[in-house]
Image (cartoon, rainbow, N blue to C red):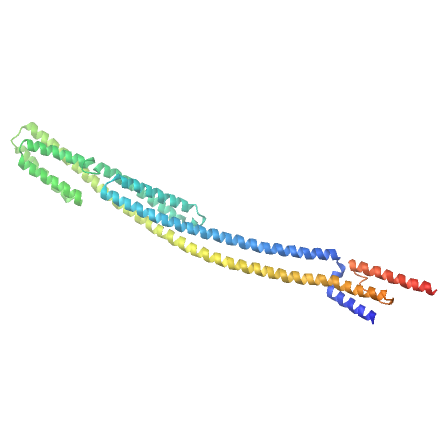
Length: 377
């Protein structure tokens, strides 16, 4: 009965452990430790992949957020730039020209900062176009400021001051000789000058020329010295020449204002594109970030669960490959110690430590049988 039970236990253990009986226990433990290390490496790799992917998406979302901030700065400073342009045109005050320059510098700085962002590659053409248009706007505004300064920022400066002085000189000369009829013509020319400055209508240029044409024969018929007539005519010529120069500059000023509006209008669609791209990119990056977080969580949990199942199965198998044969061999040794010397010794063919023990027990059994034989003899 003992032999049968021992054989059953031995065979059951052998069938459960299979090829492991030929692997030494130390190597089995090393395999188990290797699996644990591999599992930790796999888990660490999954975490590292997820952390890298999440970091990349976080960085991308951050760049789009920065792009949106810069787009808002560009829009705000561009509006300030436009406002200071209008203030200068309306008030002819150089402090607004300086404020305009500050706003332009801020716009170009924000565009340059946006250009450095990785995600800005998709709007590189728009950034370049906006920069070009803003630079053109700046150049045209510089011309407008120079032209306005030449025309005169107030009635005492530039061509306005020249016209004012020329008129006063003519009027003083006419008053000196009591030439009231010529003074009336001069006042009419002065009125056409003011009308042109207010309305910019070129018909007032012709009107002034007509009054001058009326002035000349009246001056020729005046009862004053020829030298005085020549002086008055020279002063009038100076005034008319100044007026013509003013009209040229005034017309140029209006043309420059149109160019400013055109340059800004060219830049506006690009600014709108920057806003939309930044908003859409930020939204997409945040959605991708949430997805990567969920995916990483699932991968890490799945990897951990797989490692646990595999490690548990391998550990259980290795445990049975050691404890099963040991339990069988222990039972055999106890039976042998009880005097049952006919019991079969299991696992003597194993190549592991248990096989070594089994062969040692077999030697012990054979020595007991030999001793019995010698005693019988």
